[in-house]
Image (cartoon, rainbow, N blue to C red):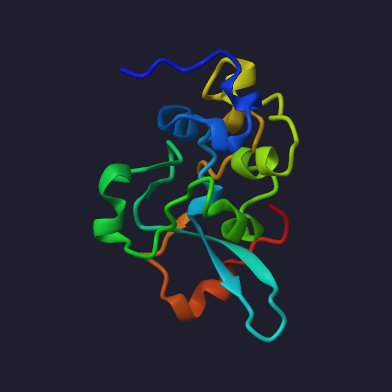
Length: 148
């Protein structure tokens, strides 16, 4: 078992060990929301339509280690891929915040000490998503989120 270094989240992202990289995730589930990207403007909109593997109660992937078997297009986020991916990540995402040189918010479990804080403070998608298995892609625009 890998030991996490004290306050590892303050280190540069490229200095994180694999277990520390994974532990940086705040468990909000926002990255698992389907997005609409408009080619003509480059505008990006989040929807309430979540990946079919997202558990809407825990805000975690139901098959994280094998997710690419079921969702081949799921992004494999790494320190190298982050530069290309950061534009679509929620502004509250720990990976994005640290990439931008910002601290983690008070509700992040590494700061608060509780994995429930992200949910209690309303920073997760718990309880308000709908699975992409239930909504045809042509209808996703009906589920656009105005403010994430």
